[in-house]
Picture 1 (tube, rainbow, N blue to C red):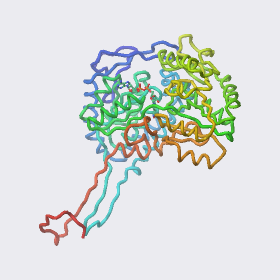
Picture 2 (picture 1 turned 120 degrees about the vertical axis):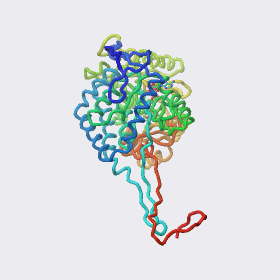
Picture 3 (picture 1 turned 45 degrees about the horizontal axis):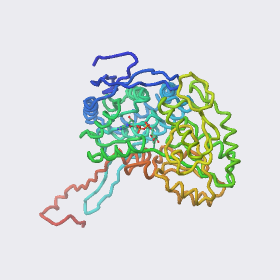
Picture 4 (picture 1 turned 135 degrees about the horizontal axis):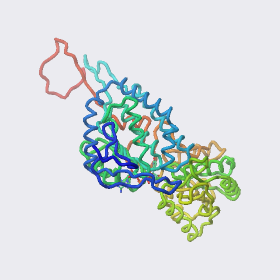
Length: 501
Ligand code: NAD
């Protein structure tokens, strides 16, 4: 294929960059500069069809490759990632905006899943029952699904794809990834690194684009499964569309995560945690804390401590050693800033207004400083919506029970945290709260790679969480084999249902 253009990001198909057939492209911004750094191609249904065809052809060998061969590729990829993680973090920061240390942290959390996938020989061992009947054995094996589709959001362009493809590939599947069009370059870097690690061409493919490419993946007859992460309305759409086309689907959606602070908590720890979890990655994390539920009488003291810490945060270009970077696009920045007007109208009290913050970066960057809003009514959109920005709300409650009721009455159930020194209260919270990931004095309880990641309610559609044991189950199907090697004395006709003797 020709059509090479400077500053144009192509697809990655069959181990090489590929411009595809589409004519549509989208801008990729450097959010700290506020300028378009490159264009990315938008794949058509035909581009997706070709990538799926390549992946299907590659599956013939990869699905039957030895466990050792697959494992060696994972080990090789792990080495490359480890050696060059700073390079990947720099690409990530230039398109997402999160500060370099945070980008490196994201890569490190993805690396954990690669390491988990290196242990796939152990994780995919089947079961064997000898002599279930006279001279009959039953055993089960885990087989790959075939071509799997992965669709990822902008906020973790490295980690979220890595929640899925290491496990998918290590279990013998082949992949078509549709990354976010907002920060797409990381996906091509990964494609090249996997090739360098020895992955055969066609096992990992990237088709860039938007709804057109997504829809083509969701409906393609040769795609066996879809792993999606993004906002709740799209997750629901993806789940409904892909399941109605016969696919296995895990679709992780949005969140509104609450931190419940009991009066006996260590308020300095709480304030540190609220600031870290509220403003890290400018609040563009599905596990960000966006609501502090302060059980009175602690709210005034806690707000002072949070405000004090916020005053020391430096917002600016993530390459300059700042604490917090810009938002992903100007449009998103304006939408988030709009919630400050909503807060004022709804009678909340804006304690720190991020629109007034200074920043260390270019004038056109998509800046909004850390924002703190107190007395947020639970009827306000500020409380109800997933704002996905550096906006921390405080809701004052009178008791533990009122706090838990609020958390459980919301539509989402991704993450939550309780801060207390009372083990009994924490234990009760762990049981009573209807949320999939719970922190006890831990503000961002993202499980390690050998557990699984996923929420409850509108934060997930489908039965399997991401990575860990549930990831292995998702990317494999089990075959049960009943085997008898005939003794010469056996035989004869018997039309009855098989029974054991
Ligand atoms: P998004 O839903 O806008 O986009 C996610 C993916 O879907 C992208 O690849 C995008 O191109 C595609 N897409 C967007 N609109 C589409 C449409 N109409 N039809 C088909 N495909 C479409 O999400 P985002 O803004 O990139 O990411 C932020 C969201 O992701 C937040 O809601 C956040 O909570 C959520 N998220 C959830 C988790 C989790 O584990 N639950 C993790 C990270 C992010």
